[in-house]
Image (cartoon, rainbow, N blue to C red; front, side, top):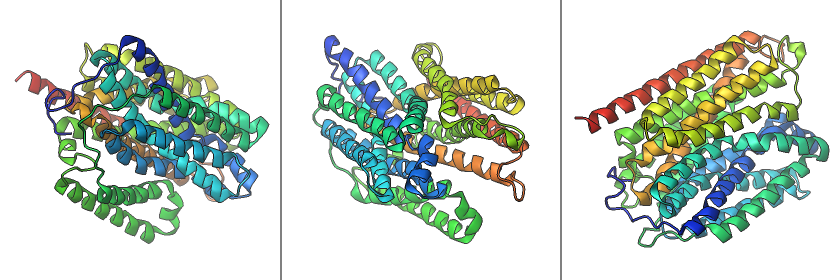
Amino acid sequence: MTGQPPGEGAAKALPVARSEARPLVPALMFIALVVAAVGSLGTPLITSVATSFHVSLGSAQWTLTVALLSGAVATPVLGRLGAGPHRRAAILATLVVVVAGSALTVLPLPFAWLLAGRAAQGVGLGLTALMMGVARDHLPEERGAAVIALLSVVSVIGAGVGYPLAALLAEFGGVRAAYGLGLAVTAAALLTAWRSVPEAPEGRSAHVDVAGAVVLAAALLLVLLLAGERSLWIRHFAVAAGLAVVAVVLLCVWTVIELRGKTPLVGVRAVRHPAVAGANLAMFVGGIGMYLLLTLITRYAQTPHGAGYGFGLTTFVAGLVLVPFSVLGFVAGKLTPRLRTRIPGPLLLAGSAVVVGGGFALFAAARSDLAELFTAMGVLGFGVGGFSAAMPGVILAVTPRSETSSAMSFNYVVRSVGYSLGSAIGGLILAAGTGPGRLFPDDSAYTTAALAGIGAMAITTLTSLVLARRRSSETNP
């Protein structure tokens, strides 16, 4: 990423023939959907894992956390590999790792092997940026932009697709049956990639900044660990604070390494471009808000009636609450590329953030009926879908074609950290609203969390409007 217009100094696109483009697009969508759904597969299975493996809920929670950690660590490395000539090999090798991990989750092995399998599955979360690179290199410009927008949306709504199905399988066939679904679809994704993904254009660097990758991996590991382990802040605050300082130092060291390197893992200088920096800031704060509302609604829906609120839904029925999120998110993803021809990308980000804020307002004001939760989740999905679809266009407008995978992988790391912090902030607010000796928080704690989410989306909206104003001043001096 050099901040120059994509057409300058970048490799020219290699559009595939129309007959070849047709199978390529659904293949890219399917692979992105599979890795997103499988990466989040641990969410509805935490209770089942705790019961089946006789471990605590905290330990079972790691079946989700370890996948997110490995995904965040693998994403920038895969993004750099995707910018080189061996992108197809990187995609196939990654999917082999994901399939192997899926097999470990199905085999009758101890809990430690299940965690290893989930870590391997999480590596696949880094493939979405590579799918975007393929689309930008091998599809006509307008078609490629629309596909990239949908890939961004699919990477978000994939959780909503896999959640209810995995919960249903776990309810009737046990946790191994649910993970068996992951093995089947990841094997299908590997076969699809082998048959459909073309080679990358020639003449690109394949060098990976190993030192930068190791330092960034360590920093992200600490950041996401501190975001996910809320009990560490409560019981061992000094340790948590010390680890936070170490994480900041590692990120500073990583920045220095990237600025001095000839072939950096992430083009930090380009990240400082106002459009890219603003977009990543909006993604970070917006990710906090978006995931905060998602966790609030699903947790509220499963709270038993004895708490004085909630609906006591089973895991499977609670998963159905995500259906409006996925459906309307996909609808927004289809509409956004058409709107981009009339409305600048930063304004679409701002509008989508307002929609998500509206979902928070609905949840804060009305949640006594299950239909109201479905409505709030649908509004959230539409806002998240629009936001996710508009984001790539804002970043790639100032990114060379050859750096597509690297640029978007950095954005996904930012999103992962934002999502993790959103989940942690929601948990902390609800914990603070839980009275002594009580198992569930007061209903008012959900309102407080919703108001915090509205604040996050307000910041996201303002950041996006500043981006829009700057873009307008650059195009109309």
